[in-house]
Image (cartoon, rainbow, N blue to C red; front, side, top):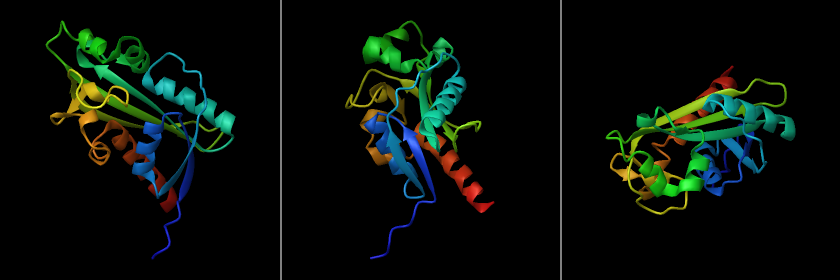
Length: 191
């Protein structure tokens, strides 16, 4: 049996969410070794990019090393991008049915799932952002409800929750952002 390929890079992915960690590891490893640390980081209000940059700077200062942070948003086109980066709190307070109710008065049920990763090699470095977007639509909840808003976001006729993990990991907003991160790391290694 061949020896496993050594990881080229190590990042400390700042998350306490086991589902996110599992997806990130499945997409990045073995090329990029992913360690996880759960930090309770203050989240500023602002655009998704501002929120991600700020989280990345704070995490790099606390870890004193390379960090990877993520911010995910769900943007309803009929609501000019809301709930956006505040989806976690909307979901917590009104649930899947409430999110659907936000669009009840609108014909347009289209939405964008947006994932932004911020990478920093350590304190004092400006974070580099990698963003992935998947266009879909908001539907009544279908599938297991064990991962955020997956049951209400439909792409290609299935909700994220109805897809198996490997299927979702090939098309998701998170995958698209991580593909850009991998490409950036590959270029860094080549130079």
